[in-house]
Figure 1 (cartoon, helix red, strand yellow):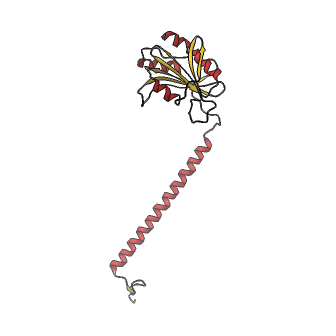
Figure 2 (spheres, helix red, strand yellow):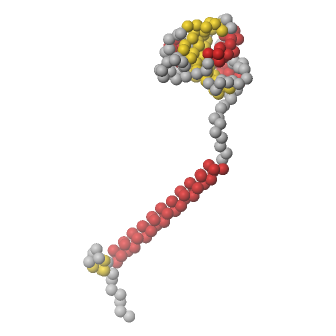
Length: 213
């Protein structure tokens, strides 16, 4: 039987050497493995996307916003170690929901404050800060440097009023505010709630303020 002639490679214009043949086969084998690896990767990615889609479809969802209702009393007891003055735990009427209660420290003024945020019955926001050994700069920062608009007396306590409801300035949550001082504490109320709702919160703070006079 006649011996088969070596394969002529067009690019070379001559038969391949054994070394070139081995290199060509090795390269083809490498390309095949790379294609297999890419195919496996694409299959795995597709399977993962299908699994995620199934999970998303199976998990129940609600259009109702998640609103936390935190335990203000318990958190105040934990935070009390930071203050010699009693931390305020206002007794709010039905329909008020606390969504935050914590100690906050201002990086600019290094003032530590007990903070509680509420959602009101009208679904607005109002929160209060009880600044411990606070200063005017800290108060001004919370209220977006708003000028006082007057005073109001609530349960015998005089509060300074700050009103940005008609302003086009970006004042964050400080659309309306009240401040009062007692003992070593400075109380700052701010938010988007109505003045009547602010008055409700201020009244609930009266026992704490009276105790520090």
